[in-house]
Length: 406
Image (cartoon, rainbow, N blue to C red; front, side, top):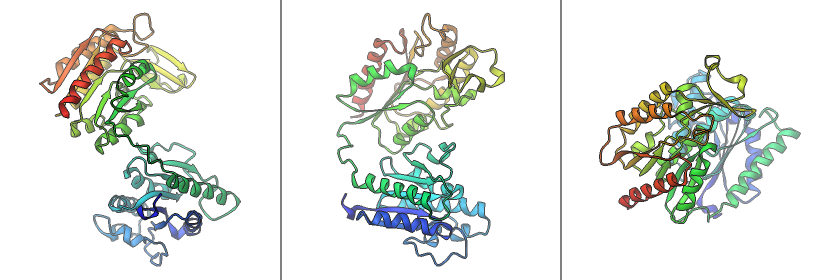
């Protein structure tokens, strides 16, 4: 890396974690990489910070000024400093990587700003919270969470090892950044689930010579990651064929998308081919974790930790209306493909989730609710979504849409 192009930002609340922050800084400096320390302390009396970027400098970026941060209420101060740091970091043009240190408060302070940075900029968060549910800290970003083992409260035989490993991981990520990772091909986003894998593999095989195919696992975070890239202008086209995350959002599954699913497609106008891949199932954990209200439903135990529930005709009506309301806001070229032969590998003749009545409820409702025009259309196809003929149609239709945008 050319050290003139940026700095590694080392971030913590230095009033309580100054020794740890300096320890990490010194290790990175030994690798000949430049570092900027950032102090996010929220205590109003902490005015003598020795960090390169002081709390006052960051707090000044809050829309209501520094007084919103140094307010005397710890909870409000943390929330305000988190917002100020987001705004501060969004204006920085010299971030080569960022490493944060914190407990629950520090992690909540630092990770929202990390999430705002582009995918690919190295991001490491050493945290006491890294051993539990970290989805809220990571969002749709590529943050690496490292469990601190001991609290981030002093230097000892354990913390030195953990912080040392984190510092050297950050230095290595910056030093050995792969300049060849980018591609001259247009970037194409695709969504896939285990039960739609044959379809997406077929589509990718046909398009990979022309496009850089980025496949996202439709597990909630996968859809959010894809939409983040769409919103950032990093995808040139989308084959969003596996929209199963909507099932979990509407019916309490564990792999839910957010309420903003499809919004990035609508706002960007990116050419998009969609389908109803795996809309035949809601995802839960182990069988015992399924809510009691679903006790009489049809289930398929994918493995000991994953239980799938077949969606009913009534639920398919609800999903179709929700998706139609979203797609009606799209002004770009979109085509929604309706595989009449089934929505997944489990939804096919002879398979446990085969239910033409439920599928027909979705198809008929979407046809009634979607406001079709020259740029927004539904297309019925007499195939299962994993049939090679379905993949061929999806590829051909996408090529037509993309050629119009060139």
